[in-house]
Structures are given as C-alpha cells and as structure tokens.
Image 1 (tube, helix red, strand yellow):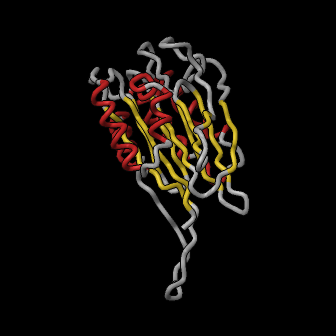
Image 2 (cartoon, rainbow, N blue to C red):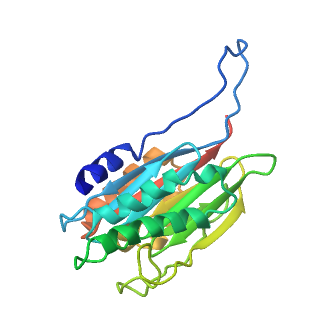
Length: 246
C-alpha cells in the first residue's frame, strides 16, 4: 500500500495548477503575472539507485535528496506541497511538515533503515516589493544570481564533506531549518541544486554557467553535457528559475 501511495505521489509532484478569474480579457491587454520561469532535471548517477526528487510550480520550487531511499525525498516534497506554503508566513512550518512525514514513515518501518532526506524550498512572494523566501535543510544549495551581478549563496551545507548530515529531514533530533528571504528584481535568477550536482562539477564551475547569459533551458543543457563527462556516482539535480513579470 505504501509503495502504491508513493508512486502516485511522485507522479503528481510536478503538476502545476493555476487558478484565475473567469472571463475574457480586453483585446491587447497585457497580463502581468509575476512568476518563476523554471526548468529542472536530474542526471541519474552511476550507482543506479534513484534518490533525488523535485517539484516545479509557478511560484514554488523544491528539491530533496533521499540518499539510498527515494521514498524519503518523495514524502518530504509531498508534505511541502500539501502544506500550501503560498499561504504561510514562514517556510519553517513546511520544513517541519516534511520532517514529521518522513520521521513518521521511518518509525513505522521498524528495524529498517532510517529515512532521511535533504530539502531545499524557494517561494516567490509577489507584491509591491517582491521577494524570494527559502528554507534549507541538509547538503543541497540555493544560489541567488542578481541580474548583472555575481551569484550569492543563500544557504550553508549542513554536513562535512561526504559525512552524514548534521541536519536532515527525518533525523531523530529536533529540526532546525535554515530560513530567510531576499528581494527580487526582474531578470534575477535563482538556482537550487542537490549535493550530487555540486560534487560532480564543483560550485565554482556551476556559478560560471549560471551567469553565462544563457536561458534556463540552455544552461541546463550545458550542465547536463558537463555532467555526462564527469559521470557522477550520485543523482545530480539542478533547477534554474528566472524571475519574470510578463
């Protein structure tokens, strides 16, 4: 039963729902719709054990890395989407919801391996002063690439090297998520990656590609080409999102 639920959940994660007013717009009238124009993908590692999962919506992007257990990543992302972060003041509660979901499933598993995952969430908050809110747990990373400026890391890794995570969704300890917010301007770019992508290409090279003037799709294609040459052992997920208003 659990595997059936997880399969359905994973299949639905990337579905985007947009609701708006009914009725016809006057001819020629532009529709201003602040949103994240995003593309993403997971380059499958050579270990042959799926671990990463991600979701892309118009204002919400999230990624998780479940180590050897893909179930943990799927459960965490399902909990994030179900928590409806677009209507919450703080993303910490979304991270806590993911933590409870993964921890509960791990405890029900009895003596089996513990379910643990990383989690990175970004949310566009539109308005007169648009900003990006984020939540981070684990060894992934979020970068803010202001238009015409150098990328700035928004998060720090919660692990040392290839060691076990010091903070993780599903660990027995109380969750202490890293949360924050930054202002956004049209043309700004935000990138979310899992640790497999960082290990494959290195942070310096990835930041060079993020600011190379390429569209999100072209940038992702170039990253895939370089990952193919690096042949990473672990799954490597990259999501590139540009802030647009038209």
